[in-house]
Image (tube, rainbow, N blue to C red):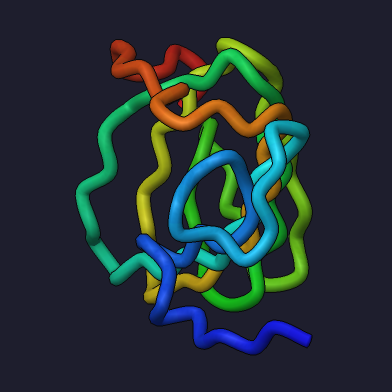
Length: 111
C-alpha cells in the first residue's frame, strides 16, 4: 500500500501522466484543488474533457452560481472563466491526462 499526503503533490494533482503522481496514467488526471475567494484565474480551455465536483464553496461560471455538491463538465475547447465567490475546494477529473493542456482564451461569451 502506498500512502502519501496531498501536500506531496503539485497544486493537488495526484493521479495522471506527470510527476509526482501516486498513480501514473495517460488516461486521466485527478486533483483536489483549493482556490481562495477572489483568486484571479485566467480564462482558459483544454482539448480534453474536465469533470468537476465542488466539495465546498461557490463559483460563478457562465452566469451561473455553482455551489457545494454541484458536478459540472467542461467540454473540449469550452472556455472556463471562473470567479471564486468564496474559498473553494474542487475535485477535478480531466481526460485524457495531457500535462500542459491549458490554453489561454478570451473571456467567455457565456458568462
